[in-house]
Length: 224
Image: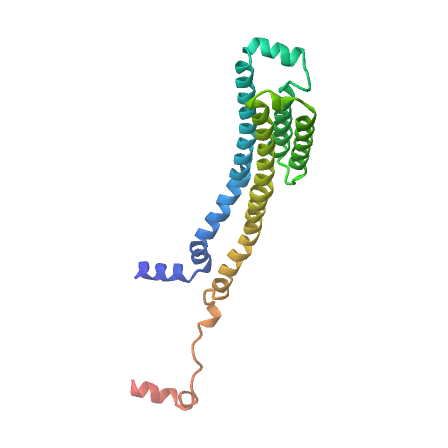
């Protein structure tokens, strides 16, 4: 009997039932809060990995170009010490370093939520590469004269596309979804709160009828 009463009383308590019913929603809220406590979100981490890939890929192509054209030490001396704007690929490598430094500082360290940093890196990269291809003599130096400028140009635009169409919109959607989660939880708990447990004042005995009051107490005792 006691166990039945306790179970029925627990089922009538809105706090217990509301906590059980809102457990999935609360779990989603907790998971989003844990995600916000991370250094960066998953989609932003993917963007930073691609920025690192940009630097490493351009560096690899530049090292291969140095080895193909006569050996690494000799070509490093020629392209770094005796730098020539019309024939050297060093500036394309430094352009990749510039993109990596600005984007990692803006979107990984400072966690910027605007597109101006990637707009600057892409604009500078495109302007420099177009001018270099027009004025320099890279196209006469074989396949790498075509490959390095094109790869650097394409990677810069992919970074812009990733940030503008993937990173920022997804983070904004996650923030808006989290903003409406407390309202949804309150809406789920509102009917349960309105249907609270019955108070002691709701339990009352009916008033005595008029017929009972007219009877003589002695007659009642005689009947007993």
